[in-house]
Image (tube, rainbow, N blue to C red; front, side, top):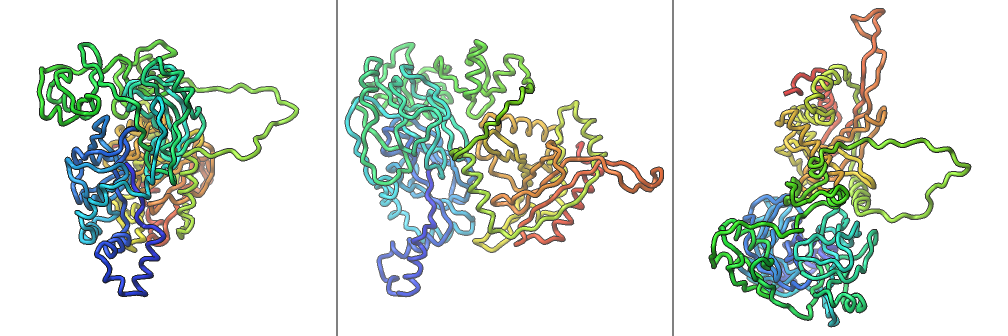
Length: 612
């Protein structure tokens, strides 16, 4: 889903003019309406480009109602394009304030179809300040902010363009191509893996054809909407399409969606027995639910494709849908391992997002256990080659840098406390055979302490100048990755059993390492833990994350000589660790932080409740 931030710099100019020249209020109503809306923190929901030939789309259904809470990653609408019916997810969180394009209505790619409000209380003011009919008329034309013009020179082939995988993505890096030049590509086949500022994601093809050329190699970057490869309609056209190169286009500004390209021809797909029926994803799902054989339905979409309205208005003989051979979706690492072991992916039940086969699924099918990688010492050389020069940052590294800078202006303070861990360590050793992890025990301990000090689980809202309390305790824990870090989140950590927490954490870590986490699994934390104890770190401070009020830094547990009443000569050895909490001083005081650390100390030193 594509959003554009509504709080633009020129809004301040408009407000200044209104303050200095009251007669502006006598201008047409739409000018005053724009001023009111832009003073509220909103996000536009725009019609996305679901294929390279899509210029407009139809809203099949809204999956959220006005007033509903929308989390990042939630499906919010079903859109019917010229190729497919697809659920479109939100990359932002907020409340659905207004629906500008109703179900069954069309809108151009990039046009505004709905409004998200940052706060529920802003919904009424947004609705009062917007005229739905005028907004719809604005939405029916392609906004010049998004796409000024795109005139593509005619030629063979259809370009594969860099998609926008998030609302903040401006460019993407191609991690790997999943198809080679000359390979057959069916609509729905994953063709490449793209690294954005949020995650690595497989990108599927919306076209049938043959991969004729690769314009952007693995490891290289391209702007959103730029051609990265070319598809030929037939195998005979591969050489001609490859020779023609990338299509030329005159585009003003950087588009926020893939620019539409007209193909030379559209041939109706064959629907004879045994061949693949061309149908949108949503139509296929409806047909499966209704027990309808797609081959008995006449498609009304472009090129004879079966779309949702054909299934809803037609019928056919009951049939069980089976996937097209070779269409099994799997992560790149899973494909690589399966290929090396000669394993048929079609025989594996995927547990990843949308049923994708993950690396863990393949390893389980092979009965493999990951082996620890060991390194052998090498003879020292006379000279050490150190890296030098500038190295471009990955999308994840850029996002981390941006988030770290965003909290520099927040006034914070830090409080440290030493906690004895002997009883905690003993409980871990007892529960370890059951699959319990140290991370899950720490998350549970923190969650139970947060129940007693909910202010530490809250955050500051500068727009309202208010303290926002979170009804759930979602503990995020930092996980180091090659080239960055991410914070998988254990939701409702205070209510889950330690066995459920441990299982959930192992699954999240596996997804994080395979870059398969959904936004909902790493953006919903209300409190963060950064644990460097496994690296023998005595004590450190953590930087406050965006959108949270506190973060806890945990050092290693070390044996320490301390005074003990019942010990010989009054001294004994215990294991202690130092924890340091960083808090937003705008809402949290030193006494609040001290109380939380005391509660945490009590839980860890008397850990019996953690075993539940």
